Length: 325
Image (tube, rainbow, N blue to C red; front, side, top):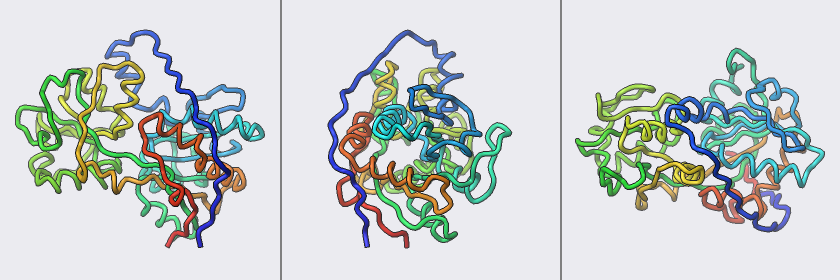
């Protein structure tokens, strides 16, 4: 039986964007492939600590979730803590969820030589089978859908190669960057299916499965860790187009980069299939705080924050805990 944990409706946040300064492509390359945002500890006083992996053992709330939500976290967590000031520290990891599941929950993992807790309070993914795996290990019982996304193509502003849609990924005159199929769910579960639906999977990838590599020499590059590497490759002139979540394009535009998006039509954008799912681990240190966060995700305030960053809101039916089976 579904358990409703919504706490009510909340007001829409005012969107404030502060764009300041100019960064060279070289500087961006070193800073912005996501590693600076992979591990953050949010304090109730607004301070943010970076890379303190040991906080995964001590924070008042520990959340591991799919990396492409990194741009949402500062808004989301600060708002949550305003409503819950007794939760003084929240540790958030945002990397590909398959890496989290296999390398940090099902076995002891390390980040830069430091051990990271195997028992986050909450784990989220874009693949419900990750949560079902935890259920099969008696580590999770319930889950809910809390937001949606869709695929899009990312190009330089002005679209110099005149790319019109996903079929153009098979063109011989463009260089393509794709999320790697080994660790990135966006391609493993969705992008590869899109290419197969279009009948161009073999031509674009040559059937290769690797990372930080040419799937097709000088034609198709698979990322190392994050599809957040794609805008850097675009700005450096190393690629003409990349496959990303539409939210990535929203973020790049918000921070002032000369990037634009090309819409992918349904059903190829996978909008009907991409659902972000989250659940609390049975081994959580802070189970009550986990429930409070899940409840917060069900409010208009939290949903508006996700929508501000380009995500698609979940409906009230989805924002109910359901049993994993």
